[in-house]
Length: 518
Image 1: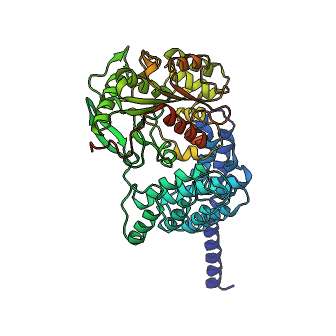
Image 2: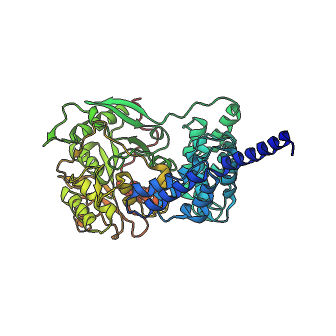
Image 3: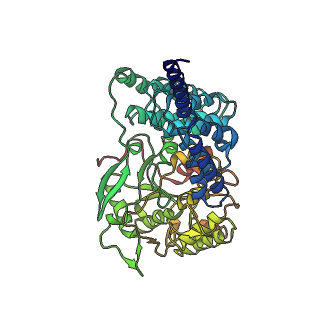
């Protein structure tokens, strides 16, 4: 063979080998990643299991098949494994590899189709995705449609807007042919993210008219939060978009301690019979002269309650409702105790009635035999720091909290929604002694959502006493339908409870009353 011909043959072989390595990945790198995966996936710690999945190279075709078909990670019973796998798939940038991933969007397995949509919701690369997302919006499974809404919103897929507006016209409900209640709010929230508009709610005619005028224009990102000073508390992050539309009472919604409002807003947005005003718990730097107890910070709830009173004045309402979740139920009750004449009612989600109740919940977690619950309990009791290790392994405090909060623990949306508010001062917050029963509480109507008795973190013997302290109450018992987040896990039950409460217990102001202060 002539030298030049030999050279051409060698070059062709080299090109094919390089191409194969580019699509198929580096064998040595893959073997090393696979060994790391096998070592770490056996460990109990969430951080190690997540690290195992994250070790798989995103530039290797074998990773796609390994995650989806061999290990079946997108079908896991744990949301945090499913979402970590989706995050890893979302890192794929090579067009050919991405096309192979998108082919799984036609899988007969609902969890795989949903997982692919989650990967697209996490990914920022939209070169090939819009047609797949559009098909996802029409999927027969509500779980896939819900995740396709997230993908369309996160990638701001303008091609999806007409279809999403048509979907809004579907009657709200859970009957065959109607929109699932766990899709409708997520749909609206992400439609707003694509268009930059938050005024229209479920008014299909306004949406269609707006989009016809603006579909060819550059669209600004939606503004979700404002920052303001109320009383002595600075830099309170709040959202009043939904408070300025709809009817019924103004309701301050406080997230579960150390959480943002992200997982409340998509679900609350589908209800227009009250006006939610979302308030993130302000960081310690927002408060003057923060007190300390043996070096730990005591969260200044009294100042926060005064800030809410200034907020009420700003919006020009005579009375309002407050919603507290878990430990923030205590903040809602504190406002009712201090300003009883300004309260139409309080809504308590999974409330801890007293410090004693909360302490019993921690005891239950420490006795549960669940290493994640044990870790949460030790951090909550300040025996260890969130960054500590337990049994020689590093635990993920974020995941521990969310895991305890979910009834349906394989719901991948938990991963899409997970956000944790971290105190910028980097200090543990000591919860002052509290009792949400208080004094003169018989004057305050209360809506109380209680999870089932299988909830390991609730002291149910205290719930009867709590109800007696609020005789003007409506109690919604979740049974097996929700654990900690009734608005997400059982939206129909949550809505019915609110409507019953407002109809029977709350003096609702006429439509259009209040909101004059802004």
